[in-house]
Length: 435
Image 1 (tube, rainbow, N blue to C red):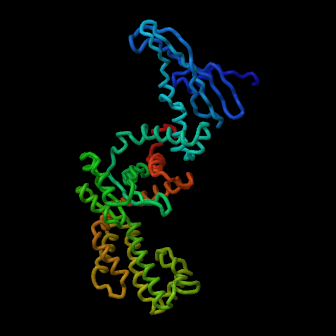
Image 2: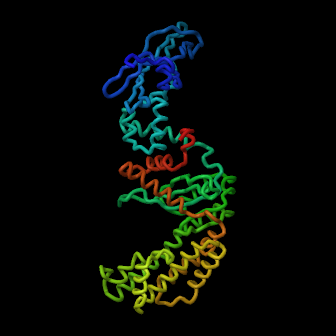
Image 3: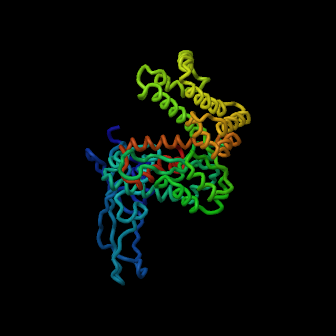
């Protein structure tokens, strides 16, 4: 088809500029971009000051970056007519707000394309800027502002939230400034089995005040609707929830509870290693060789690992490690039990055993017992509320790690928060009904 032309749909419809109130009058294909000459469809020749009809004075052109086609950057060269009122001498130009914001360099269709590329296709901002043929700062400011207006500031975004997860997140791995932020996750779809978790908010810093202030900013009806808050062992999140959401149930999720026991096991192993050998673990040391096997669930241990554990615990000098390992395995078994009521009884017995009668030498277990005694209600609450844990929160943290790697790191926390909300805020259906 060497002489193909646009008939139905025509070039205006094909490039979707009709939604912008424009009509294409010509095109120019260059090696690095496509230029579409456009005019404004509506004449807009009535004076905004006195209401009289104006006369055409001259024209000006406005250049807008448009969504690319075939990854060829597309530029709209819009001819804008200017009018002059014969009565009051007022001069004005045709309204182009349907095509773009005043003084904007990117069309509304270009902004939507950039937003879909960021949220749905997970492209970097540099790639979006390349597709629009604008600078990185121009693309970043415009696309994030559009995302803030269209998605993040949506007043209904927090509707229907019943289960909340809160956790810390490391947003940068440098020594300069605070590296922690607080992430707040909607776990309601996970509990109800209707979808994945989504990011509700990201707060500067990791403290009770940051979480409490965010809760205080929500209206009373929304706070009364929160039923469960899943969290880690940080007591600041617990006190903030108790003060601002008195009717909500705090749940300390299994991942962090087992992690506390795992840390106690590691600390005990290192202490015994130092007491017996006077140095940290080295290749060939039994305690060092079994460091990973000790963290494997008893029901998943292979034959070789079982032999390694038997050899390790045959030495009476490792009795403290064996005791700590036993508590660790009992906690895992309680969480993995198919009957939650039985698992709850098992976990309760573990906490009771750690609260009383632990030998003084087992300093790690004594410390673990004190921690669990303070949060016993939160730990046991998990067994009464299925599918309520901070596991999906860790999944969102993983997506944010991917985002930071895609952007090769962030230096501006404001940009990071906006990008994180767009990346993990669950906005796909609103952006494109077919994606």
